[in-house]
Image 1: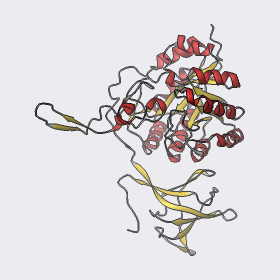
Image 2: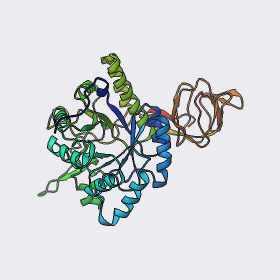
Image 3: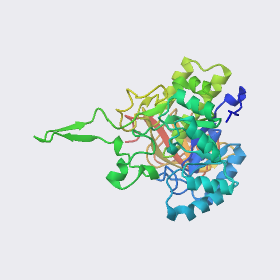
Length: 414
């Protein structure tokens, strides 16, 4: 089989594929510049514990994505048991005309996708690690594969060139300490299988080691030996582009809207800057600072530069320098005068703070208030009452309002 993928310069610009765990994240991803989004419906996907969507949401997802000229991919990438086949059929039937492809690997899902005429993207759960495996899935009707996360960049390049099939790879987000899709630790400890999208992440926990003979105990609190660091490819993004990877995928369907917006926007800017010839060390430093400001377990290059990875593990929990605190909710938005009315219920905020407003229709809006008013009078910081700020971007009644603060924090009005 010959490689019939296009080789023009334009085809080398990769698709930027963003996660969407709910409508707010979906809109945040689109606003931040994603070319495509991927999402789960119900429980037949590898983020079954995320908020996810329902079958009834599919027409609205399709409408939003079509209006934004963004591709929509449905993740149906778990093992499917016999009793779930009717649910699977209902899901895929509803997806016809609403999604651009289905991410899957179970042969039963592949067969139903072919029956319904749905394009197939083979999930990383299939552990495709060579061109022969990719060609097998191409013969089953797949137009794209997501290779095993454990592949090096050279191996990814060989799969794309040898199999003549589109390749999608992860560029940012959580990594598994085990081979993806082959870990049974959560199933053994909690009865919740990582292979069914229900992982309780026991690898991220602190462990106590007990010496058997005398019972001496030691806490492994400095080196979290099973907790993999997050993948971050921005420092060497040019190498992935040069390898001809077709789609750059960001992990994070369990993450919040500001994580999605921040990460997507950073990679959008980096990709665009690369093709404009302006991606330099200074811009990378700026974008890495932004990535470090949202949830992360510190970063590594993953397996792209070889196996094993010297600094693969050792980080537990969120290592971001900033976090968000709930302020309250939007009470009103006056479009004519471009003023938002906020009910401050919890944490306060001040002039110049980074304020985030998010909602299922609004997506994510960030701004720094130049002035805060209560009953027409300037106040700073905002008291726990209803205040107003000038805001050019439209927000909606009931949207939640947050303020971004350093992780060691400071609270006004206490």
